[in-house]
Amino acid sequence: MSEQLSVGHAPLAHQSAAARRSWERTIALALAVLVALLALINLPYAPPTWFDEGSHLHVPRTLVRYGVYADISSEGFRYFGPTIGVGPTVMLPVAAAFKLGGVGLLQARLVIVAYMALALVALYFLARRLYGWQVAVLALLLALASRTLRFDGLMEYGRQVLGEAPGMAFLLLGLLGYSAAMLKPATARRSSLLAGLAFGLALVTKNQFVLIVLPSLALLALLDWLYYRAGNWWVRLAPPVIAVACFGIWTVVMLTFFGPDGFAANLAKTRQAAGGAIFVFDLEASLRAARYLIQVYGGLLLPGLVYGLWRARARSPWALAHLAPTLMAVLWIAWFMISLGWPRYAFPAVILGSLPVALLAHDLFQALRNRQRAALAWLGAGYLALVILAPLALTTRVVLSPRYAAHEMAAYLDRNVPVGALIETWEPEMGVLTDHNYHYVPTELLDPAVRRTWLGGPPVQYDGLEARPPYVLLGPFSVYTRIYPDDVLKRDYQVIFTAEPYALLRRSAP
Picture 1: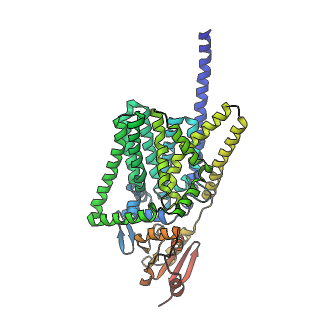
Picture 2 (picture 1 turned 120 degrees about the horizontal axis):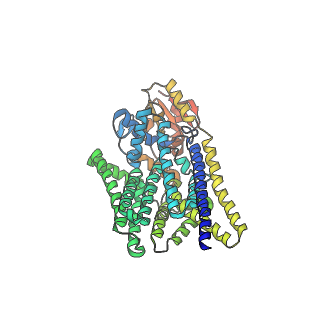
Picture 3 (picture 1 turned 180 degrees about the vertical axis):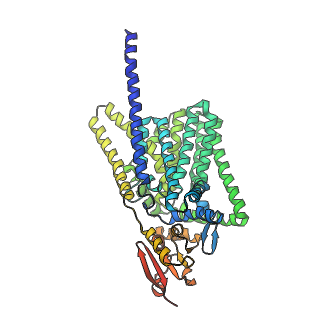
């Protein structure tokens, strides 16, 4: 009888496994189509290009046009700012896209979309390895729905030339390698080396990651040695050592490129930026950061992280592999609370937090069903669906609402302003859309101007209009920072063209 049952049930088990694989493939295909649509529709126009994106694009454009790895303004090359804020893992692929397809916003954004796709694939396989395909699907949906009512999420950042999506791609690949090293001892050495390389590329891509990734890796190694005893010394030391080596190599390259004096100046300006935005310790900024965090994932981010830490209490390889992304997210949020409170700083924690949040939702649903509380289980599922669908609707609205203002202004400049005429501006995105001769506000004024806008105080003093430039181009960032004195603009200039929020002014005073 037992043999008959065994033989009789084997096809059923096989059919069940085949059905699950079929469901997973179908859902994965549907998600791939959703991601492609959200990533590619109206790509050059939504979200509208802006200051940070334009600043980053100056480096690959300058590299392609002049063979110099630098920012550029009318007075010459600038070696601080975007040259160190985002690494060559972004700048060089974008430069290659410019070389192949010409300088343009679409070409550059396609590079970042590719990185975003890589990040989503790595997130899915990391979650699948740790928790199974159902939690993986849920984590992926949460990551896609990571925006809030006012602030961008993965899909918006993944459509702009910023360091967030590429940095997350490398970071998630590093965590994928780390989990393989923990859960598959036979591949521990190779997986540890690959994890360290991916972590190192994340540090090179976005230098702010150094603040969190390296301490996290060190803390994971210490916890494994003292508590978990789950890995070997390859797993404990290879990832942080190789990551430090990668960042060290890039630092040596910058030192060689800039020279000792230039490197020291860059270091001093980086310290100024740290004091202005990265380490602020302001109560209002911390409250602003807290208000943002409780909105993410419908208020589930912080409970999910607490649950993730609780699930990591067991002394097992799985628990340590599970702890890695959760610990990084927790440390990121701790830093975010003492920073300027700009939600973009919390973006990596939000994406990493999708893993424990998905696990919490899955486990809670299963526990309620097992205790025959189906009504509560489906009520929770309904809330989770709302948490996902509402942000996705907001993202869809962004994607389907293209903004052409920057392109309209660029077209007007191409038709009506001589290419060699000096244009004073603090809208660096225009330098990618046209070949005009722009003078930009000095980079060292960026952090004081942003700090003043967020924390209050008088406008930053800038004397760029004393040189009497024939044109001034105002836009979102110059208006946001109030960098140009209104009285001088009203007295000496007149508006000759507007494409909201941009305005081109021509000097009227002698």
